Length: 216
Image (tube, rainbow, N blue to C red; front, side):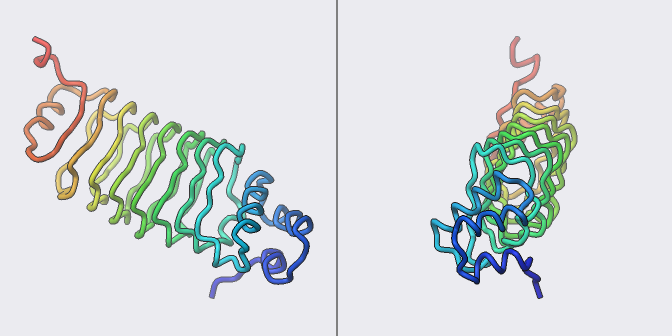
């Protein structure tokens, strides 16, 4: 049985005034800006239980950490575009179908095991590696403008479109992904033989920088 923090329970079930509720929520959620954003969405949607909040959208709020957000475990959508997060662990949010944590400062993002996730945006961060294990329903991923140098996308068996340009990838195996129809790989330091291998694949659009023979 999931245990709800007593202060969260107090906020949502005791009908206290909003100003007091905000102060109590800030005591549970360590990041003040995240607490303020949560409080606004709780009030705007007349949320009475932690289970009722299913979507969180906090763009450009200077949020630096997510400690305390785990009490809202029924979230299906988390959108935290343009904040100041350096690391996130979303593995406890088992109902997530949509995640947007683009344009942050992420060096670590734990998302493995999110079996319901369908859309993932992590572009404009500082990621060097990410584990896609268990992400069998992801259809679209945009993880451009990072520092990725070695990743395995084979767990993404439902992937239809993938955007990986502007990273440090020297290779990326794209076989055994039956639904993949488009992948963007420009601005990666890939050798010519990798481009030749991509060009030999039928039924898939692979956008890359080309090789020396293409310019003769």
